[in-house]
Length: 449
Image (tube, rainbow, N blue to C red; front, top):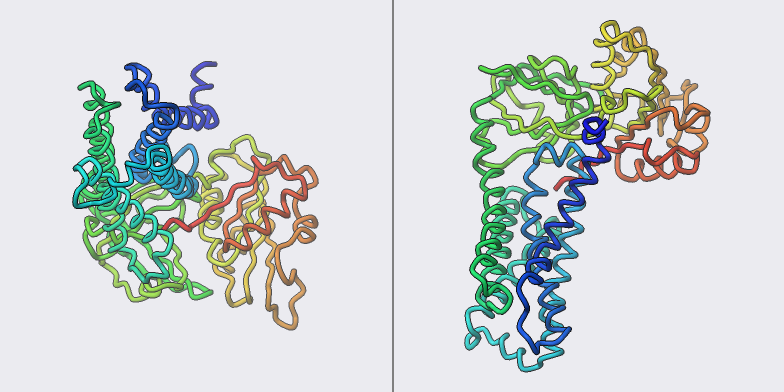
């Protein structure tokens, strides 16, 4: 029983949250071990506490972006990166509040803002704060500032290291709260761990990816301006993945260049010898997929994601709701299940609600029809601009449409949504209004940058 409890996803996720809170509050625990300087007052100590908490949060940011499988498997990388963004703003606010309190309580500390006359401990604080401001500004307004992704990613890492390094240097130089040698050593170890995670992401992981290359075997056109990129492992067995997961792809160049892009697999998760990604030509990179030549070298970092039916063996069936290229992970789920059905004797039903602009935009239309012969699969196409002789659903996937098709016993199914952000928000709200339990709704976001 204890072993099963520890393997529970909810328990594991709760343990990671507990670990995060513990490490964030560890600075305050450390301060309590050794008395703080006397006569400084509540507000001074409170200001210092906020500074240490912010420093711990910023150090932990490196672990959130390191794509650590054990952590990612508990929440999904999209949720982790959203948390990374929001918690960055919280840490940023704490960093700004920390000196503001000092300036109010001790106005004489304002002279420390004079960079040329201030001691080094104050200079490090000013430089670290400026680095953090630059980091936040270039991240939130990256597109408005027209900063290309690859240079921004390098700049982001440099500014993050400067922020944590200068913040730690400031805390040690002040010395009032880290006077004991072991406290300075402990904080240095935290900073070095954060630096190691950056080195792992930028150097160690690309090194191992370099040892397991793939070759492009085929680039196949699909309906809806979509191109399927088929990869075959070269010199290794490839990777197995749970249907619905995704991987980061690097094409043609070395993985050390950090020019990678996330895409869902659309092929059978049990076939590592041929991995397919179906990619819609929307942006600068995706529009070049059609021009990729067979034999081009590729590298994969993955699999990642918790958007998979594999986690719900006790579900009575599945409702898949896709919009446009959101059909990709759904296709992987259905193809994999079709291949496994005889082996696992899994007769559970699937309902696919697939929204497209026109019939010509319906990717995998022929393949989906063939899957109906192998699975208990019901497909509902919803077209915004249907042809004149169209007798199917029209318009958008709204509450009324969902009510017509999803089972009456809503809690017996798991619901998977992958579409444009606006459609996902509307479908999620409609499912809530139809009394679908929130724990049964799963969404795949690709706003990872």
